Length: 448
Ligand code: CO
Image (cartoon, rainbow, N blue to C red; front, side):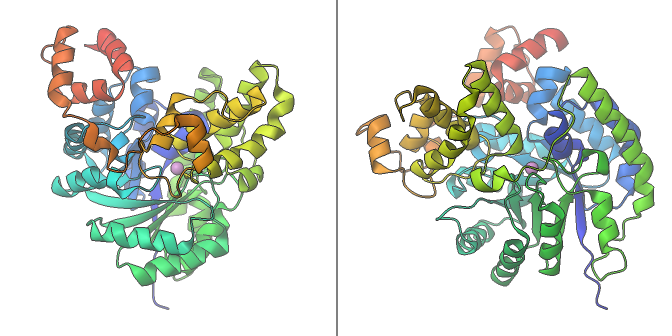
Protein backbone atom coordinates (compact mmCIF):
# COMPACT_ATOMS: atom_id res chain seq x y z
CA UNK A 1 0.00 0.00 0.00
CA UNK A 2 1.65 3.20 -1.17
CA UNK A 3 1.48 5.78 1.58
CA UNK A 4 -0.05 9.18 0.86
CA UNK A 5 -0.23 10.72 4.33
CA UNK A 6 -2.62 13.64 4.58
CA UNK A 7 -1.26 16.72 6.30
CA UNK A 8 -3.24 18.80 8.76
CA UNK A 9 -3.24 22.51 9.43
CA UNK A 10 -4.56 23.03 12.97
CA UNK A 11 -6.78 26.12 13.23
CA UNK A 12 -7.69 26.28 16.94
CA UNK A 13 -5.61 29.43 17.48
CA UNK A 14 -7.15 31.35 14.55
CA UNK A 15 -10.15 30.24 12.52
CA UNK A 16 -11.45 27.81 15.15
CA UNK A 17 -11.60 30.44 17.85
CA UNK A 18 -12.66 33.12 15.34
CA UNK A 19 -15.60 31.02 14.16
CA UNK A 20 -16.85 29.84 17.56
CA UNK A 21 -15.76 32.48 20.07
CA UNK A 22 -15.65 35.71 18.05
CA UNK A 23 -11.80 35.74 18.11
CA UNK A 24 -11.71 36.51 21.84
CA UNK A 25 -9.09 33.93 22.84
CA UNK A 26 -6.20 35.55 24.73
CA UNK A 27 -2.58 34.64 24.28
CA UNK A 28 -2.35 33.51 27.92
CA UNK A 29 -5.01 30.90 27.10
CA UNK A 30 -2.89 29.54 24.24
CA UNK A 31 0.46 29.53 25.99
CA UNK A 32 0.08 26.48 28.29
CA UNK A 33 -0.44 24.13 25.31
CA UNK A 34 1.86 25.60 22.68
CA UNK A 35 4.63 23.11 23.39
CA UNK A 36 2.26 20.15 23.07
CA UNK A 37 0.65 21.58 19.94
CA UNK A 38 4.12 22.03 18.50
CA UNK A 39 5.04 18.40 19.11
CA UNK A 40 1.82 16.98 17.66
CA UNK A 41 3.10 16.84 14.09
CA UNK A 42 0.85 19.31 12.31
CA UNK A 43 1.83 20.57 8.87
CA UNK A 44 1.14 24.09 10.14
CA UNK A 45 -0.61 25.91 12.95
CA UNK A 46 -2.82 28.75 11.78
CA UNK A 47 -2.41 31.33 14.50
CA UNK A 48 -2.44 34.85 13.08
CA UNK A 49 -4.23 37.07 10.57
CA UNK A 50 -7.94 37.00 9.79
CA UNK A 51 -9.72 38.82 12.60
CA UNK A 52 -7.06 38.13 15.27
CA UNK A 53 -5.14 41.35 14.59
CA UNK A 54 -8.18 43.59 15.01
CA UNK A 55 -9.39 41.62 18.02
CA UNK A 56 -6.02 41.86 19.82
CA UNK A 57 -6.02 45.64 19.57
CA UNK A 58 -9.75 46.24 19.98
CA UNK A 59 -10.87 43.77 22.63
CA UNK A 60 -7.92 42.06 24.27
CA UNK A 61 -5.40 44.83 24.92
CA UNK A 62 -2.72 42.77 23.19
CA UNK A 63 -0.17 43.88 20.66
CA UNK A 64 -0.66 41.51 17.72
CA UNK A 65 3.02 41.77 16.76
CA UNK A 66 4.12 40.79 20.26
CA UNK A 67 1.66 37.90 20.19
CA UNK A 68 3.29 36.67 17.01
CA UNK A 69 6.79 37.00 18.52
CA UNK A 70 5.79 34.90 21.51
CA UNK A 71 4.02 32.32 19.35
CA UNK A 72 7.16 32.00 17.27
CA UNK A 73 9.29 31.52 20.38
CA UNK A 74 7.23 28.46 21.30
CA UNK A 75 6.48 26.95 17.89
CA UNK A 76 8.85 25.27 15.48
CA UNK A 77 5.84 24.08 13.47
CA UNK A 78 5.27 26.60 10.67
CA UNK A 79 2.86 29.36 11.68
CA UNK A 80 0.34 30.26 9.00
CA UNK A 81 -1.82 33.33 8.57
CA UNK A 82 -4.74 34.52 6.45
CA UNK A 83 -4.29 37.77 4.52
CA UNK A 84 -6.97 39.63 2.53
CA UNK A 85 -4.65 40.71 -0.29
CA UNK A 86 -4.73 44.45 -0.87
CA UNK A 87 -7.10 44.78 2.14
CA UNK A 88 -4.34 43.25 4.34
CA UNK A 89 -6.37 42.54 7.50
CA UNK A 90 -8.63 45.58 7.21
CA UNK A 91 -11.64 46.48 5.12
CA UNK A 92 -10.26 48.96 2.57
CA UNK A 93 -7.66 48.76 -0.12
CA UNK A 94 -4.25 50.00 1.07
CA UNK A 95 -1.32 51.39 -0.86
CA UNK A 96 1.25 48.95 -2.20
CA UNK A 97 3.94 50.17 0.21
CA UNK A 98 1.71 49.33 3.20
CA UNK A 99 0.94 45.87 1.83
CA UNK A 100 4.60 45.13 1.13
CA UNK A 101 5.79 46.41 4.50
CA UNK A 102 3.10 44.46 6.31
CA UNK A 103 4.06 41.20 4.63
CA UNK A 104 7.75 41.86 5.28
CA UNK A 105 7.13 42.46 8.99
CA UNK A 106 4.81 39.46 9.30
CA UNK A 107 7.56 37.22 7.93
CA UNK A 108 10.18 38.86 10.14
CA UNK A 109 8.06 38.22 13.21
CA UNK A 110 7.60 34.55 12.43
CA UNK A 111 4.97 33.83 9.78
CA UNK A 112 6.02 30.95 7.51
CA UNK A 113 2.90 30.45 5.41
CA UNK A 114 0.73 33.27 4.06
CA UNK A 115 -2.64 32.40 2.58
CA UNK A 116 -3.59 35.33 0.34
CA UNK A 117 -7.11 35.79 -0.95
CA UNK A 118 -9.34 38.38 -2.57
CA UNK A 119 -13.08 38.39 -1.94
CA UNK A 120 -13.81 38.69 -5.68
CA UNK A 121 -10.99 36.35 -6.78
CA UNK A 122 -9.56 39.34 -8.65
CA UNK A 123 -5.87 38.41 -8.93
CA UNK A 124 -4.87 42.06 -9.40
CA UNK A 125 -5.79 42.55 -5.74
CA UNK A 126 -3.44 39.83 -4.47
CA UNK A 127 -0.42 40.31 -6.74
CA UNK A 128 1.48 42.76 -4.52
CA UNK A 129 0.99 40.62 -1.41
CA UNK A 130 2.03 37.48 -3.28
CA UNK A 131 5.15 39.15 -4.69
CA UNK A 132 6.10 40.47 -1.25
CA UNK A 133 5.59 37.09 0.39
CA UNK A 134 7.82 35.42 -2.21
CA UNK A 135 10.44 38.16 -1.90
CA UNK A 136 10.67 37.91 1.89
CA UNK A 137 10.85 34.14 1.92
CA UNK A 138 7.40 32.98 2.99
CA UNK A 139 5.53 30.02 1.59
CA UNK A 140 2.81 31.85 -0.32
CA UNK A 141 -0.51 30.14 -0.80
CA UNK A 142 -2.84 31.38 -3.52
CA UNK A 143 -6.54 31.07 -2.77
CA UNK A 144 -9.64 30.04 -4.69
CA UNK A 145 -12.53 31.63 -2.80
CA UNK A 146 -15.19 28.99 -3.35
CA UNK A 147 -18.75 29.87 -4.12
CA UNK A 148 -21.63 28.68 -6.28
CA UNK A 149 -23.09 30.77 -9.10
CA UNK A 150 -23.75 30.56 -12.84
CA UNK A 151 -20.24 31.98 -13.30
CA UNK A 152 -18.38 29.74 -10.87
CA UNK A 153 -17.68 26.25 -12.15
CA UNK A 154 -14.86 23.83 -11.51
CA UNK A 155 -13.41 25.06 -14.80
CA UNK A 156 -13.30 28.72 -13.72
CA UNK A 157 -11.57 27.62 -10.49
CA UNK A 158 -9.06 25.53 -12.44
CA UNK A 159 -8.33 28.53 -14.68
CA UNK A 160 -7.81 30.68 -11.59
CA UNK A 161 -5.46 28.08 -10.08
CA UNK A 162 -3.38 28.07 -13.26
CA UNK A 163 -3.13 31.83 -13.10
CA UNK A 164 -2.02 31.66 -9.46
CA UNK A 165 0.60 29.05 -10.37
CA UNK A 166 1.93 31.41 -13.03
CA UNK A 167 2.14 34.17 -10.41
CA UNK A 168 4.57 31.99 -8.49
CA UNK A 169 2.54 30.82 -5.48
CA UNK A 170 3.80 27.69 -3.70
CA UNK A 171 0.47 26.01 -3.06
CA UNK A 172 -3.26 26.47 -3.68
CA UNK A 173 -6.01 26.69 -1.10
CA UNK A 174 -9.67 26.04 -1.81
CA UNK A 175 -11.34 28.35 0.69
CA UNK A 176 -14.90 27.26 1.35
CA UNK A 177 -15.85 29.81 3.99
CA UNK A 178 -19.55 28.96 4.13
CA UNK A 179 -19.35 25.19 3.78
CA UNK A 180 -20.94 25.10 0.33
CA UNK A 181 -18.56 22.59 -1.22
CA UNK A 182 -20.37 19.29 -1.64
CA UNK A 183 -18.42 16.04 -1.28
CA UNK A 184 -18.64 14.88 -4.89
CA UNK A 185 -18.03 18.38 -6.24
CA UNK A 186 -14.93 18.55 -4.05
CA UNK A 187 -13.74 15.23 -5.45
CA UNK A 188 -14.13 16.49 -9.00
CA UNK A 189 -12.59 19.88 -8.22
CA UNK A 190 -9.52 18.40 -6.52
CA UNK A 191 -9.01 15.90 -9.36
CA UNK A 192 -9.27 18.69 -11.94
CA UNK A 193 -6.85 20.89 -9.99
CA UNK A 194 -4.38 18.04 -9.55
CA UNK A 195 -4.45 17.44 -13.30
CA UNK A 196 -3.98 21.12 -14.12
CA UNK A 197 -1.37 22.40 -11.64
CA UNK A 198 1.70 20.91 -10.01
CA UNK A 199 1.22 22.62 -6.64
CA UNK A 200 0.06 21.09 -3.35
CA UNK A 201 -3.66 21.62 -2.74
CA UNK A 202 -5.05 22.52 0.68
CA UNK A 203 -8.76 22.38 1.47
CA UNK A 204 -10.36 24.74 3.96
CA UNK A 205 -14.02 24.29 4.79
CA UNK A 206 -16.50 25.18 7.52
CA UNK A 207 -19.08 22.81 8.96
CA UNK A 208 -21.93 25.32 8.51
CA UNK A 209 -24.05 23.16 6.19
CA UNK A 210 -22.97 19.84 7.70
CA UNK A 211 -20.85 18.59 4.76
CA UNK A 212 -17.42 19.14 6.38
CA UNK A 213 -15.89 15.73 6.99
CA UNK A 214 -17.64 14.09 4.00
CA UNK A 215 -16.17 16.76 1.77
CA UNK A 216 -12.71 16.20 3.26
CA UNK A 217 -12.93 12.46 2.75
CA UNK A 218 -13.85 12.73 -0.94
CA UNK A 219 -11.17 15.39 -1.43
CA UNK A 220 -8.61 13.13 0.25
CA UNK A 221 -9.53 10.24 -2.03
CA UNK A 222 -9.08 12.65 -4.95
CA UNK A 223 -5.58 13.52 -3.78
CA UNK A 224 -5.84 16.66 -1.69
CA UNK A 225 -2.59 17.21 0.21
CA UNK A 226 -3.59 19.23 3.27
CA UNK A 227 -6.84 19.72 5.21
CA UNK A 228 -7.65 22.42 7.76
CA UNK A 229 -9.07 21.06 11.01
CA UNK A 230 -9.79 22.38 14.48
CA UNK A 231 -9.28 20.54 17.76
CA UNK A 232 -12.59 19.10 19.00
CA UNK A 233 -13.76 21.93 21.31
CA UNK A 234 -13.29 24.45 18.50
CA UNK A 235 -14.60 22.26 15.67
CA UNK A 236 -17.95 21.78 13.88
CA UNK A 237 -20.73 24.39 13.92
CA UNK A 238 -19.46 27.28 11.84
CA UNK A 239 -15.86 26.11 12.36
CA UNK A 240 -13.72 23.42 10.70
CA UNK A 241 -14.12 19.64 10.83
CA UNK A 242 -12.62 18.03 13.94
CA UNK A 243 -8.90 17.25 13.99
CA UNK A 244 -9.15 14.12 16.13
CA UNK A 245 -12.03 12.71 14.06
CA UNK A 246 -10.20 13.19 10.77
CA UNK A 247 -7.04 11.59 12.20
CA UNK A 248 -9.06 8.63 13.45
CA UNK A 249 -10.95 8.27 10.18
CA UNK A 250 -7.70 7.93 8.27
CA UNK A 251 -5.86 5.64 10.72
CA UNK A 252 -4.88 2.34 9.12
CA UNK A 253 -5.32 3.64 5.58
CA UNK A 254 -2.86 4.86 3.00
CA UNK A 255 -3.84 8.41 4.03
CA UNK A 256 -2.92 8.00 7.73
CA UNK A 257 -1.65 11.30 9.10
CA UNK A 258 0.94 9.86 11.47
CA UNK A 259 -0.36 12.15 14.21
CA UNK A 260 -0.87 10.54 17.62
CA UNK A 261 -4.51 11.24 18.37
CA UNK A 262 -4.20 10.42 22.08
CA UNK A 263 -1.53 13.06 22.53
CA UNK A 264 -4.15 15.61 21.56
CA UNK A 265 -6.54 14.70 24.39
CA UNK A 266 -4.99 16.91 27.10
CA UNK A 267 -4.66 19.77 24.61
CA UNK A 268 -8.34 19.47 23.70
CA UNK A 269 -9.27 19.36 27.38
CA UNK A 270 -7.39 22.58 27.99
CA UNK A 271 -9.09 24.34 25.08
CA UNK A 272 -12.54 23.13 26.16
CA UNK A 273 -11.96 25.02 29.40
CA UNK A 274 -10.76 28.05 27.47
CA UNK A 275 -13.83 27.99 25.23
CA UNK A 276 -16.23 27.91 28.17
CA UNK A 277 -14.33 30.66 29.95
CA UNK A 278 -14.31 32.93 26.88
CA UNK A 279 -18.02 32.31 26.16
CA UNK A 280 -18.89 33.28 29.73
CA UNK A 281 -16.64 36.30 29.89
CA UNK A 282 -17.82 37.82 26.62
CA UNK A 283 -21.40 36.48 26.84
CA UNK A 284 -21.10 34.74 23.48
CA UNK A 285 -23.46 32.32 21.81
CA UNK A 286 -22.42 28.83 22.83
CA UNK A 287 -24.09 26.62 20.29
CA UNK A 288 -24.17 26.59 16.52
CA UNK A 289 -26.66 24.37 14.76
CA UNK A 290 -25.99 22.90 11.36
CA UNK A 291 -27.78 25.26 9.02
CA UNK A 292 -28.94 23.85 5.68
CA UNK A 293 -30.34 27.32 4.84
CA UNK A 294 -26.81 28.24 3.83
CA UNK A 295 -27.11 25.90 0.83
CA UNK A 296 -30.02 27.88 -0.59
CA UNK A 297 -29.04 31.38 0.48
CA UNK A 298 -25.23 31.11 0.77
CA UNK A 299 -25.25 33.29 3.86
CA UNK A 300 -22.56 32.32 6.36
CA UNK A 301 -23.90 31.24 9.76
CA UNK A 302 -22.71 34.21 11.81
CA UNK A 303 -24.23 36.59 9.33
CA UNK A 304 -27.70 35.01 9.44
CA UNK A 305 -28.07 35.85 13.13
CA UNK A 306 -26.77 39.40 12.55
CA UNK A 307 -29.30 40.00 9.79
CA UNK A 308 -32.09 38.63 11.94
CA UNK A 309 -31.09 40.89 14.84
CA UNK A 310 -30.99 43.95 12.57
CA UNK A 311 -34.54 43.27 11.41
CA UNK A 312 -35.67 42.61 14.95
CA UNK A 313 -34.31 45.94 16.15
CA UNK A 314 -36.56 47.59 13.56
CA UNK A 315 -39.52 45.48 14.65
CA UNK A 316 -39.49 43.80 11.23
CA UNK A 317 -38.55 40.24 12.11
CA UNK A 318 -41.55 39.04 10.06
CA UNK A 319 -39.52 40.10 7.00
CA UNK A 320 -36.79 37.55 7.73
CA UNK A 321 -37.85 35.09 5.02
CA UNK A 322 -38.07 37.97 2.51
CA UNK A 323 -34.53 38.94 3.42
CA UNK A 324 -33.26 35.39 2.97
CA UNK A 325 -34.76 35.39 -0.51
CA UNK A 326 -33.55 38.90 -1.35
CA UNK A 327 -29.90 38.08 -0.60
CA UNK A 328 -29.33 35.84 -3.64
CA UNK A 329 -31.19 38.34 -5.87
CA UNK A 330 -28.94 41.19 -4.77
CA UNK A 331 -25.91 38.97 -5.18
CA UNK A 332 -26.97 38.15 -8.75
CA UNK A 333 -27.59 41.86 -9.48
CA UNK A 334 -24.10 42.69 -8.22
CA UNK A 335 -22.35 40.15 -10.44
CA UNK A 336 -22.23 37.10 -8.14
CA UNK A 337 -19.46 38.06 -5.72
CA UNK A 338 -18.48 35.22 -3.38
CA UNK A 339 -19.87 36.10 0.06
CA UNK A 340 -16.85 36.67 2.28
CA UNK A 341 -15.53 39.79 4.06
CA UNK A 342 -16.17 42.46 2.85
CA UNK A 343 -18.57 41.43 0.02
CA UNK A 344 -20.83 39.48 2.42
CA UNK A 345 -21.49 42.62 4.47
CA UNK A 346 -22.04 44.68 1.31
CA UNK A 347 -24.62 42.32 -0.16
CA UNK A 348 -26.20 41.78 3.27
CA UNK A 349 -26.74 45.47 3.98
CA UNK A 350 -28.14 46.10 0.49
CA UNK A 351 -30.61 43.23 0.82
CA UNK A 352 -31.64 44.50 4.27
CA UNK A 353 -32.36 48.00 2.94
CA UNK A 354 -34.34 46.59 0.01
CA UNK A 355 -36.52 44.55 2.34
CA UNK A 356 -36.95 47.24 4.98
CA UNK A 357 -37.85 49.96 2.45
CA UNK A 358 -40.20 47.67 0.56
CA UNK A 359 -38.56 49.07 -2.59
CA UNK A 360 -35.36 47.87 -4.19
CA UNK A 361 -32.29 50.15 -4.34
CA UNK A 362 -34.18 53.14 -2.87
CA UNK A 363 -31.39 53.62 -0.30
CA UNK A 364 -27.94 52.44 -1.37
CA UNK A 365 -24.99 52.28 1.06
CA UNK A 366 -21.72 53.78 -0.17
CA UNK A 367 -19.98 50.37 -0.19
CA UNK A 368 -22.59 49.02 -2.61
CA UNK A 369 -21.99 51.95 -4.94
CA UNK A 370 -18.25 51.34 -4.64
CA UNK A 371 -18.69 47.69 -5.54
CA UNK A 372 -20.69 48.72 -8.63
CA UNK A 373 -18.01 51.30 -9.47
CA UNK A 374 -15.34 48.59 -9.47
CA UNK A 375 -13.60 49.95 -6.40
CA UNK A 376 -13.21 46.46 -4.93
CA UNK A 377 -12.05 44.99 -8.24
CA UNK A 378 -13.76 43.08 -10.98
CA UNK A 379 -16.96 41.26 -10.02
CA UNK A 380 -17.20 37.72 -11.45
CA UNK A 381 -19.99 38.85 -13.81
CA UNK A 382 -20.85 42.46 -14.66
CA UNK A 383 -23.26 44.31 -12.37
CA UNK A 384 -26.73 44.15 -13.96
CA UNK A 385 -27.07 47.21 -16.25
CA UNK A 386 -30.38 48.46 -14.84
CA UNK A 387 -29.14 48.10 -11.26
CA UNK A 388 -25.92 49.94 -12.03
CA UNK A 389 -27.95 52.68 -13.70
CA UNK A 390 -30.20 52.92 -10.63
CA UNK A 391 -27.38 53.16 -8.08
CA UNK A 392 -24.54 55.05 -9.81
CA UNK A 393 -26.12 56.43 -12.99
CA UNK A 394 -23.58 56.80 -15.77
CA UNK A 395 -20.53 57.23 -13.50
CA UNK A 396 -17.39 55.75 -15.05
CA UNK A 397 -16.37 52.25 -13.98
CA UNK A 398 -12.88 51.57 -12.63
CA UNK A 399 -11.54 48.98 -15.04
CA UNK A 400 -7.96 49.00 -13.75
CA UNK A 401 -6.49 47.71 -10.48
CA UNK A 402 -8.25 49.76 -7.75
CA UNK A 403 -5.07 50.26 -5.69
CA UNK A 404 -3.44 52.05 -8.66
CA UNK A 405 -5.34 55.10 -7.44
CA UNK A 406 -3.71 55.00 -3.98
CA UNK A 407 -0.51 57.00 -3.39
CA UNK A 408 2.16 55.52 -1.11
CA UNK A 409 0.97 55.82 2.51
CA UNK A 410 3.73 54.75 4.92
CA UNK A 411 5.48 58.13 5.23
CA UNK A 412 2.20 59.98 5.55
CA UNK A 413 0.99 57.63 8.26
CA UNK A 414 4.27 58.00 10.13
CA UNK A 415 3.92 61.79 10.03
CA UNK A 416 0.32 61.54 11.20
CA UNK A 417 1.36 59.43 14.16
CA UNK A 418 4.13 61.88 15.04
CA UNK A 419 1.54 64.65 15.04
CA UNK A 420 -0.61 62.64 17.40
CA UNK A 421 2.23 62.31 19.90
CA UNK A 422 4.10 59.23 18.69
CA UNK A 423 7.15 60.59 16.87
CA UNK A 424 9.15 57.39 17.34
CA UNK A 425 6.45 54.93 16.41
CA UNK A 426 7.86 51.60 15.20
CA UNK A 427 7.04 50.38 11.71
CA UNK A 428 4.83 47.76 13.37
CA UNK A 429 2.84 50.48 15.15
CA UNK A 430 2.52 52.43 11.91
CA UNK A 431 1.09 49.30 10.29
CA UNK A 432 -1.37 48.76 13.15
CA UNK A 433 -2.41 52.39 12.79
CA UNK A 434 -2.73 52.02 9.00
CA UNK A 435 -5.22 49.17 9.38
CA UNK A 436 -7.26 50.33 12.37
CA UNK A 437 -6.54 54.01 13.07
CA UNK A 438 -8.92 54.75 15.96
CA UNK A 439 -8.53 51.37 17.58
CA UNK A 440 -4.73 51.55 17.35
CA UNK A 441 -4.62 55.06 18.85
CA UNK A 442 -6.76 53.93 21.76
CA UNK A 443 -4.44 50.95 22.22
CA UNK A 444 -1.32 53.16 22.11
CA UNK A 445 -2.85 55.48 24.71
CA UNK A 446 -3.09 52.59 27.14
CA UNK A 447 0.01 50.62 26.19
CA UNK A 448 2.74 52.97 24.92
CO1 CO B 1 -12.30 29.98 7.43
